[in-house]
Structures are given as structure tokens and as C-alpha cells.
Length: 114
Image (tube, rainbow, N blue to C red; front, side, top):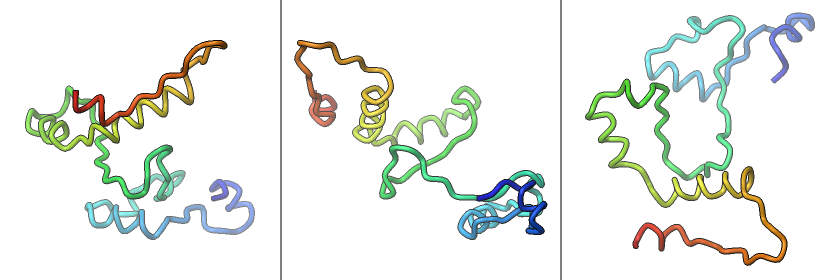
């Protein structure tokens, strides 16, 4: 989406909200009108998260959550998917493959079952 200031120059509305995001906000008691004028309700793809994965987004620090909320999160973690995210992030961003070394592949499910 073009930036709000560019839209204003071109005579368009400064905010254009995504229908799905607007609906999610409304269902959760947030009025679109309450968003700052430089923000838009939009849906963004989360990198490396498959569309079929169920997600809970918690924007508070873990230390600020109640014991029940922390327990709920821990009991509902899909460790295989969590390890996949960690592994893929490490492989893409941090791992250095040295020349003349053996590349070891890890099966996440085997690690979890040991």
C-alpha cells in the first residue's frame, strides 16, 4: 500500500483498512476510528509461518502474564513447528558451513521423541 502522505498528495484517503484486519479488530472490540491517522489495519504474512499453522500472538512480556496464561501457552506449543522455525532461522541467518565438513541434518521429530 502507498504511504498515507503519498495518498494525500494524490487526493486519496489517507487510511485504507484491510477488510479482514478491520473485522478482526471489530470482533475484538477495537474501533477502526481509534487507530492513529498514520496507521492502517492490515494483514501481514509472518515470515516462515505456514498459512495452515494455528497461531496465538501475545504482545506482552512473559513475565507480565499470569501463571494460567503461561501454562496455557506452554501446553499448546507445537514443539515440532517451533523447532522448525528455530532451525530454519538459524540455517538462513547464522549458520556458517565450513568447507570440507560433513553437513548434518536433524529430524525435529526424532529430537522431540528422545
